[in-house]
Amino acid sequence: METSSKKLTLYDIPEFVEPELRKMKGLYFINLFLIVTDFLMPQYFGIHIGYDITCTRLANILLVVYVLFNLKIVLAFIDHSLKCALTFPLLAYLFVAFYTMIFRTDINAFMMVFLEILTFYMLLFGIRYVIGVIKSIKIILFCAYFLGFYGLLEYFGGHSLYLQLLSTVPNTVTNVYRSGHYRIMGPCGHPLGFGLLLLLFLAIACYDIERDEIYLFRRPVLLVVLFFDIFFTGSRSTLGLAVIEIGAILLFSGIKNIKKSLTIFLVLSIFVGLFLFINKNNSLGQYLLMQIASVIDTALGTRYSEIFGAEIGRLDSSEEYRRFLPQIFGLEWLNPILGRGIQEGFGAEFYGTDGAVVYIYSIDNYYVAQFIKYAYPGLVTYVLFIITSIFTLFRNGLRFRCGLFVIVGIAVTIYFINLWWVDALQTLKFVYVFLALAFGAIIHLKKIKR
Image (cartoon, rainbow, N blue to C red; front, top):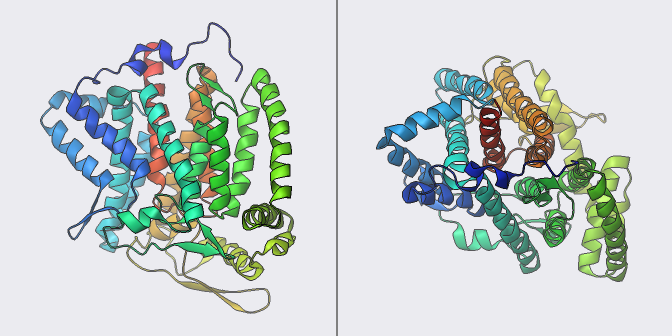
């Protein structure tokens, strides 16, 4: 985005530097704990007492107990939440989850949604009034650096240190391999989940806080590390969308930054080409080339990845499986108004073009999964939430000429596009941090610009 010398930055807004409740130390450290552990601690770490008390849920409990003794904070919390543009679609989605719980006798169908939404509003209030917008961005960047370099360590170590050291509650998470290579998963329960998080980090790595600008190579080391991690997740959709995300970031960078980025990109491409050429015959080079070829194969229907050792049979099976998922919308035995909830298992079978039966037992598509759980009302209300999020971010990015809103808009858009090929895999908490960061700032800017 093109800027001028008169353009305000985040540092020019006192409340973003020193929020009103920053000096309330107890409240500050609980909110800090919530944000940091949201990113760094896995869902399988916690205490199991018939119900998993994870770090996020512990923070939820502590915040609820804290505010119960401070009525002013409760009133401020409610007032701030009601001013958020996302409140209407989220309440509509919560209502669908509520009646699904009643009719399907499935308390988790409501509680899982309720806790996610409650956490979003806690983040919305905590980032704006307690931690501060600028401090929160720096925390996110710290987590990006930490997990970025951890991802490299995990790949070369050949297994998840998180799973080895921090698995304290019952779970089904295992190390994942494909074509003889380990797929990193960071603090997430699956490589695809880590891929979703890396796409969010990729965007914020290109944001210049001091100038409120978008610049692709603002943090070149972090950018390169995150890209390596994306390769090491072994996710074709993540890698393909990362390339599209880079293009979008360039598009919104402004003429000056686009020129600088393209120059650096050209030089970097030469070094990457040399790196791949030198390492083409070793394990690392073969893996990187296989991932690039897999994306090309998916887009063009070719089979180049087989040259570099890809298990074509497994990749083809994955593609064939995903091709049938949208047909679930047409199943007559699924109630289009009342979903099945989240406790009841799901299975379906379809016939392929060759007459073979294809069994569907795992739903690698978030939107199809929403339809199964909450039927069309749940799917429509959540899509309304997504559209409202993206529209509000870009609209206010242009209105206030704010690079933060645009970069979060890019990150959120890419994240939700990727959910067409994967389920959310307990990563919604990551995107809610980004949305809370931006929407808290939007609410305040609207207030002071009146």
